[in-house]
Image (cartoon, rainbow, N blue to C red):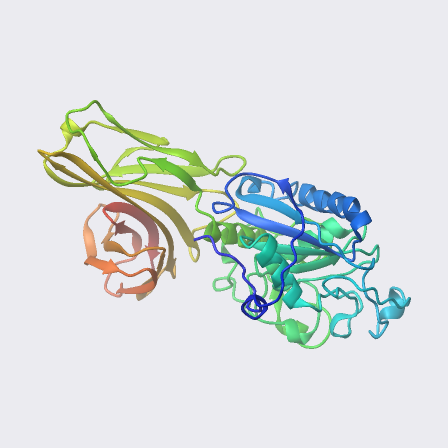
Length: 467
C-alpha cells in the first residue's frame, strides 16, 4: 500500500522545463519501490555551499533515525539529498510579520530557487516556499518516487512549517524542527501548543472528546503511561480542545520525545504505507513436479523493525503450519484438487495498542495450488489488509472496516469461548478498497468472543468483549 505524496500542482508543472541536479544517497536501505523515500532539498544554497547543505541533510537524517519511533523503523526508509543550486544565498525576509521584532528585523530578498521565506501568513517563524511549481518540477525531474519531502532554507535563523512538505531553516535546531514538522507532514499530527483557533480539528492527538471510554487514545489511559486528557492553553477556544499530555511531547516543545499517542500515529502511518514483505519464492505462476522432492516456499527478504517485532504465520488450507520465514511442502501429502497456502506478516510492536479501537495491518502472499496428474500448479498473488473492529467492548452492533489492496474472497465466523459458532457471514467476494460489515450482537450473552476473518482461505482471529 505504498503511496507517494504527489503534489497536485505537479499536473500543472510538467509543461515547464525541468532542471536536473545531483542526487546524493544519505541512507540507502534498498529498492525505492519497497521503501519510504525521504527527499531533502536545499534552498538558498550556492553551488559553492552544497557541502554545507549535504552536511545539514546528513545531520537531519542521523538525528531523525536516532529517536523513537523512527529508529525502530529505520530499515523502512531511504533518504536522498538533491543539490538544488540557487542564484543567491539565503532565505527571504520582508520583515512584515507582527512578531518580527521578537526574532530579527533584517530585511533580505535573495533570488533563491524555491522562494523560501520567513513571515509566512503573518507569523515570522513560519518559513514557507513560494514556488510550489518549482518544487514539483524538481521532484519530477530528479526523484519522482519520493514519499516525503524536506526543504532546508539556508539561514541560521529559526523557522519552519508543515504541510505537503516540511520546510525549515538550517538553524542549530534544524534536526529538532525536522522531527517536529515531519510529525505534521507524515503522520498528520497536530501541534500540542496553542497556535490559533484555525488549527483546531479532530486529529490523532487533538480532540474535543473528554470521556475516557470514548477518547481516541483510550488504549493509553493506563497507570503505566503518562497519557491523560489534557486541556490546551491558552487563548481563543483552547479550553474546548484536549491533547494526550502537557509539556511532555515533541509536538508541543522541541527537545522532548514524542508522546506514546504520537508514536503510535507515526507507526500506524508506516504500517499503512510499507509492506514488509520485500521478496518471496516461488514468485510467479508455475507448474511444479508433483513427484519431486519437497518444495520450498519462503519469504526471502523482509523489512524488519529494530528490534524485529514481525510475526509470520503460514497456513495451509486454513490450518496454521509454521511461524518461521519458510515452509517446506511435500506434494505427496496433498490430495488432488485445490489447496491454498498463505503466509501473513503482522507487526506486534508495543508502540501500537490494537485492543479496542485500532487497525490491524496484515500483509499476505497466497499461493493457489492445484494438484492433478499433470503436476502441482501454483498461482501466486499478494495482498495488504487493514482490519478495524469496533467498538470493543460491544453492545448491540459490532462493526468491521476492511481495506484491501486487491479483491479477495472473505467470510467470517463469530465464536464463543468454547469455539461454538454463534454468528456467520458466508463467503463473498470483497472488492479492492474499503468495505464495511456490521453484525448484530444484541441477543448474545456477555462474555469474550472471537471474530475469525477468513481471507482467501487463511484465518485471522480478533478477540472482543460483549457487554
